[in-house]
Amino acid sequence: MGIIIGVLSVTLMGTLISGLDRSFESSMSMLGKDILYVSRYEWFSDMEWWEVRNRPRMLPEYVDKIKKRSQYALAVAPVMQRGASLSLDDKNTRTEIFGTNEDYMETISSNISNGRFFTKNEDRSGARVTVIGDGIREAFFGDQNPIGEYIKIDGVKFRIIGVLEKQGKFLGLFSVDKQAILPFGAYKRIFSRRGWMRLSVKVPPEKLDEGLDEITSVMRHIRGLKPNEKNDFAINQTKAFEKQYTALKVAIGGTGLFITLLSLIVGGIGIMNIMFVSVKERTREIGIRKAIGATSGMIMGQFLMEAVTICLFAGIIGILLAYLFSYFINQFFPSTLPISLSIIAMLMSMIVGVISGFVPSYRAAKLDPIDSLRYE
Amino acid sequence: MTLISLKKIHKIYNVGGEEVRALDGVNLDIQENEYLAIMGPSGSGKSTLMNMIGCLDTPTSGLYEFEGEMVQIMDDSQLASIRNRKIGFVFQTFNLLPKATAAHNVEIPLIYANIRKDKRLAMALEALDSVGLSDRSHHRPNELSGGQRQRVAIARALVNNPSIILADEPTGNLDSKSGHEIMGILDGLHRKGNTIILVTHEDDIAQHAHRIIRLFDGKIIEDQKNGEK
Image (cartoon, rainbow over all chains, first blue to last red; front, side, top):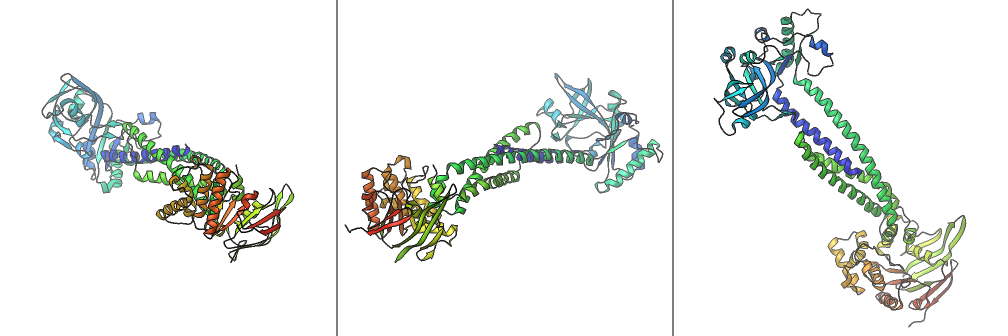
């Protein structure tokens, strides 16, 4: 039983971690490693909230200022975001809408699958055009071509000019396919003048550190900070995610390891007990086998094999259960069960079998044939 | 040729701090193709002597040579090898593995002798055939009568072509008809050239043997030839 739980926990833990790894990687590639996210808030920070709150807002004019002063910034996109309801005829859905500029496509990893992104002129003129996520297209238009159709965002008509390609879920938590991207000009006018904003700045991937330094100093300059003042803005990178993620991975791995060890020890003791009983019950058999020519080593091998077989059997059950569990978990959270892990788990249960079977088998091997033949 | 040579064998057990001399200076030579019966009341040491000859037990003192080799200085695996190849045991209580079929029971000594699987089964069936049980090879011991079980045990003892068959009260748990059958098989084995050592306390069983040894209090008190029949 313990072995089953042990194998189960080690494989599930590994499943979770490898699943996380995979989804993390694809999610991170959604974000892009070479993008600096400038905003009021650090993604992961232990700063007091009021300190952060009192920081000045990001302003749309920073976009041009950064572009003018920075030599590393390849693209700068302001991003405002809020929830909104989308509707077409009698269909409607809640989704996230983004207000941004023509540089936005440079700062995300996905592409337009159909149609086009909006232009600088459309942005400046406040044209009511939108690029929708693949999820929205599927929900509203199905197989029809959405390009040129009109859709209502919070009651305001927008013309669809492009569709983003399908991306899947971010960290398995929410789908990025349900979104609508609007030109910054229209977004500001219709939905929000103020509100939370961030800037996405693309820098050359090989100049990440230099870019970070430069953008920091540009931002300090824009804000007019004196050298002894602290930054009143935050520049985030996917690296920060990675740090958090590693910590999470260690936590899951550590807990899993602890459970695994504990259950393996319990399981090992269980197997040892079973084997002791088995040796006791079969004392006579051991005597017979010795009388007809089994050496101590052969007897020992036989009982060790039995212990290992029991453990392997439990291990197989554990792995089957793990597959089952990971299938269910996968419905809610990304997880995959790597083959290598199953093999490791099997080896592990075999080792437990050898260790816990050793003492009983040794005892069996050392039994005196005469006494054990008389044993009833 | 002398198969077994026991010289001044002593076996002393310590039971609750008291010395029990199970064997007290036994001298015994057994030649090839002898048919020997060891007799004596219970507690006379005949089982101990049997175990000693069968290399299951080692003497406290004395000299035991098996085919001219010193048994005392052998290690565990050498002793096991002698038991496996040179000696076939037949027990009063059969001592078959209850969960294994007759064929498998007979096969086990061959497994320990590292004989190939296909050859093993053929040899096991041949041995079962020689005791007239070829049609029972797939039965488990509890599906067999006492006499049949003992015949399986004899087949197991025979399967490695050992030179000696050690039978410890082989008919003790059998009715007289099955007992006669078993003794008939043992007589036949003797005629084929095997050395048979029989432990019994029944006189008529002992009469099958050609030499009868009587033990009492760990000593041989009588060693006589039995008149040829």
